[in-house]
Length: 471
View 1 (spheres, rainbow, N blue to C red):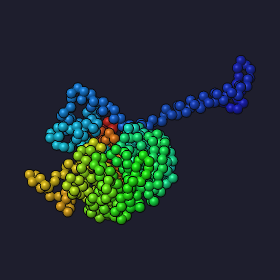
View 2 (view 1 turned 90 degrees about the vertical axis):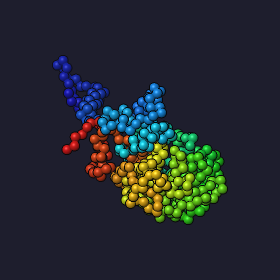
View 3 (view 1 turned 30 degrees about the vertical axis):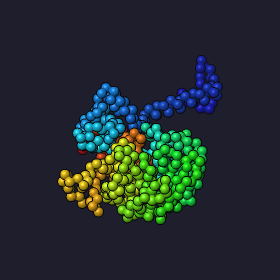
View 4 (view 1 turned 180 degrees about the vertical axis):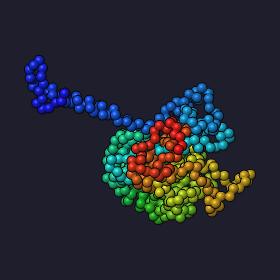
């Protein structure tokens, strides 16, 4: 029966006009019914989820039962078949601190935790370049800071949008959570640093530099924090009252990156003047200068786990240098990229895993313990064409050649280590995870083939357990 404004119907031989409210309710019912029938015909999109609860629970159960307490899961238990997914343990189970059977596993447990699979691409409706990203301390959300001065929160498991807010008046260049996870600092292009509580309540603003704030780092006890900026200076601030305590001067150009050692009283900075400097924060003086780079130093980061005695730096001269703080020499020089390097990140649990990103949108993963130092005379020497200046090199254990369409500005590992987020000039944040056993699309994604047809990122394969026959 169709409903018009004055549709009549016949009942018992008499013609009646249907009341107006009944006609409207009937029309709404039919419209809702048609909408439901139409929605059933559409294929429901499968929401991508990376659930770390299952393998974490399995690991705890095995430990409580006395399984894999001293001798870790040996290499080869997880095989290239989808049913072996249940045996894939969390990243923490493979870390060096729990790997007490390193002799049998050949020190290569990090090979099981390479984040090689693109699981989701997130972008705002109004797109802006992304300069920095941070996982919230509990790992449930990803905080993205864009060139428009906005904070965007994305769910860390289902990757769906949660909220957006205007945080700064100018582009946000850096963010950093405190070590006790109670505070967040953000710096913008105007030189302003803002204090944020975990609920994003802004409690304090300070003018730290006359130009943009490029990096922020907290001291080990969170009583002080460090900022560096385009005015070629580093400044140490008292966190409680926001007062400047010391100014570190010595760079001749913009300071692009800075970091505070998690244990030692040591600060590192990298600048546009091609120099990497080590500072004593108590004496406000430079204690060492590294002259190895030939171009702008973009990122310098201390090793967060293991011995914590390594320092990684990347530069626009297409090289990454790993500096050993115990010998005060370059342990490793990686010249493995086709273009200038933009940033790097250490894995939070694997002391030997280092990830670099480049201006052409590529991501490279390295396992540093695959390099054998020449100082060990009992090991035969291997000729390597990448060796330069009497310092060894190592090749990438995995490459993602087309991870982004443009330069990558930020790399951030999940606190648990099972996810990696990258973001950059293509105005998107992308999530990477470990590939499942026997993933049929492992090497057929557009990030490896560069075959981006239409909305290619909406056609990511979710049913990775379905075996695809090679044509």
